[in-house]
Image (cartoon, rainbow, N blue to C red; front, side, top):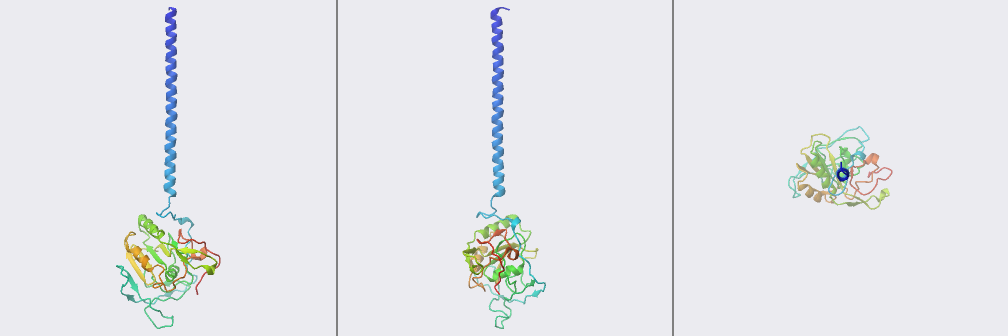
Length: 291
């Protein structure tokens, strides 16, 4: 082979080797870019999942934490009280479908009026004549108002009604979407200043709304909203009458036998801790009663 041929052959081999090295570098670079892009996609996906999992359950930024809730305690006594029959009244509220009962005086208040909702305090369970109850005998201690994901003692919720709260109960098999809508409905309600100065708490506020599932499938409708002496049955969490009911009855002196009474401030061992707090204040030590 001539020198020229040998030189050409060597140059050819160098060119081939260089081409292979350049190709390998491009392949490695491509792999790195692909790996980085894949990692970015994975990280982005993780971020999305975390946001979705930890995002508040309602549209108002409040998070329902059922793992930390404490259900209000049951009545301390075993003696059962049977509520006296209550007289039905005409609906004069202007809200279609509202049911009304007699709230004008009651046996034991110095009159002989019968057929009205009783206000007496009892320490045992009560068999109510209306499901869910709209008033009647109740526990001496109210419960801390808010959203609970499990049923609460009716005797404690009725005391809240006496103080001006409204109580939304729903069928335990209600669709999760409807429950979420009800929760959002509660959290959009305005906070009301309540007087807890007797218990060492200032600037206390609460929405004066309880939201709980019922104990069984015995409700007269999938969703029921009640105040003292009044009740409305609906089938959807988006029924506009729910807001009408709240606006009419929540914390109104006309409809609250003990207007101005608080629905918060009870020690959590007794008054419970909602899965979604209805107020702005912690629970003080000691016991609370308005006997």
